[in-house]
Length: 102
Image (cartoon, rainbow, N blue to C red; front, top):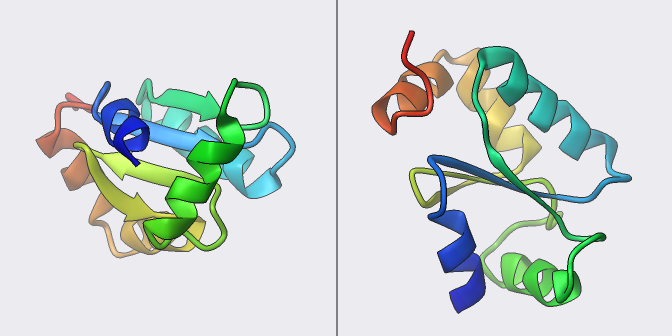
């Protein structure tokens, strides 16, 4: 759990993902299209990725990926991020943490 907290605070936006997950790809693409440069951790490609995935599950991420942290706080998965985007809350949140300047 401590490792997740440390990784989640390394940049304004952090995404825990799996390289084979289509929803992870969609969320990463959304942030890239905004001009955000998130830290992306592909859990199927890093050492101890399975441990991080289990910690994300304990934090309430279900499914465990994608898991998005903004400003060090867990926002949630694809459903939560898309809901924020559709209700126009995501961009102001990204600006607030310094991930967007426009």
